[in-house]
Length: 61
Image: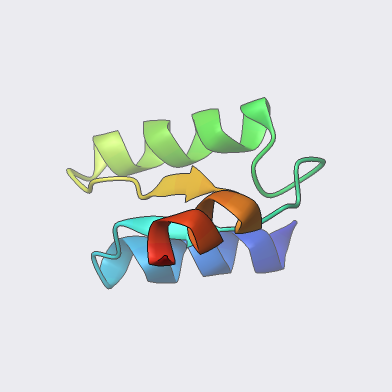
């Protein structure tokens, strides 16, 4: 879980628009996303959007 938080933190600080992951069990679970949004809101950061690999591939084509 810590690695997931670090990935999202780096994406947030780097002002990336999206994080691509299929890790529904931890990284993009509802409780994890709620924690990201709450923490980022408290610090006036914008939370990246989370999408899966298939959606990412569609957006590239």
